[in-house]
Length: 28
Image (cartoon, rainbow, N blue to C red; front, side):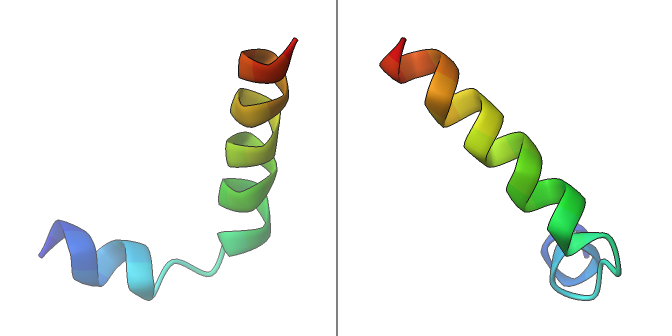
């Protein structure tokens, strides 16, 4: 169910932004 919620999450842009922020933090 959690996966389905993520797939249907209308806030994907926000999720992608968070992932990018984490990735940038890891690179720094």
